[in-house]
Length: 448
Image (cartoon, rainbow, N blue to C red; front, top):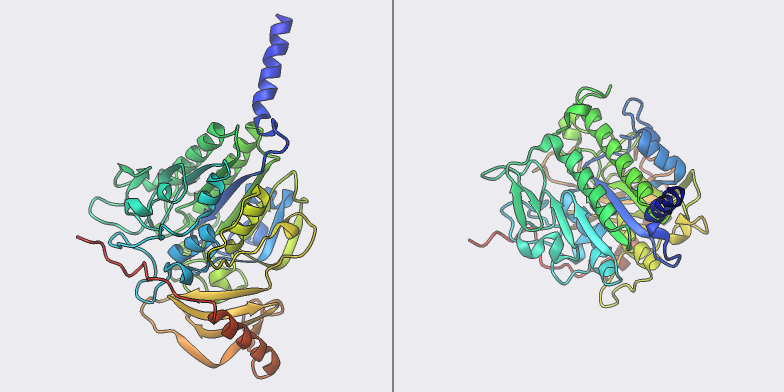
């Protein structure tokens, strides 16, 4: 009996360390991508009443980035930027005619685009998408057409109703319509845990774009009326629980040490919904704008084997940079037949150097609105407040802010810093020469 117990213990230890069977195995990647979560909505980013113990612990055990930007201030182009490492203007996923894709859209992420999932799959990774897609709902645009082995989630935003209601899909099949959105976060979490358990013996990439806290807000019974912040707080606290469950699953399956987990948001908070929207903290404006509150997002990286615990990075980074970073860490080759806007953040992640990102271009609705270089940010155009249909404001001369001294973008320095203004305008002119706008995918109607 004693020998049987020892053998059983040995098998148990072996099972929990499957991810370390090969010391040369490349890291796993988990990207947790919230929808409309604001810069100021987490405890570790300063919110006084929303309780996020799992994310706070993730930041304490990993690395927090205070100047991390999404690729666009609204859903569709932001997701396209993350998955391809390219500004959405280059792949047609931003539009002056339609802000995002809708259920009656006929376009989506073009087949010729290379996604993180495709890149990693070619290098032996299992790939799974659990959550909101919003890069095209037709079969040729769904996750499994872009490198994912599996998909479970909602194909677009949860406020986009069509006859029958919002659908829940597995692969290319609708399995529930209308979906019970009260349990969406819980079910996404269960699917993510299953994916980790199923693929623990090989390198994997899990992309988990949550539906919440996009309007309308839904939360499961266990988190209803639990947060001092009200319904919005309930929703964020359930998302925090979800992060905790994913981290537990990584540890239980022996993958914790060798997994890089990234937590961030697709854009800033939807301020026009007031109490049901989030907070950008001390940043100006929110979703739909290229002010800091629209595109600077709360971001945490955790990788116990490599990232020094409790570190803060104040240099710039972007969701655009996940493509080059993951490729480097996985030993994969980036495509060389196209322009990439992705920087390899590995030196900053490992505490071996600064972030290589020195410049960030701010696009929305198919147009270049501004640029940040170093601590200075220039606005050619702005939108504020967020009200769809209101025209943008052109600034001549452009607005200029020092966003390290003035993250709330309150004090225009254009008149005092003409040399900086010229430097940033030169950067814009040089950048524009590299841009050939692709076919507008968002304006394509469904063919009847």
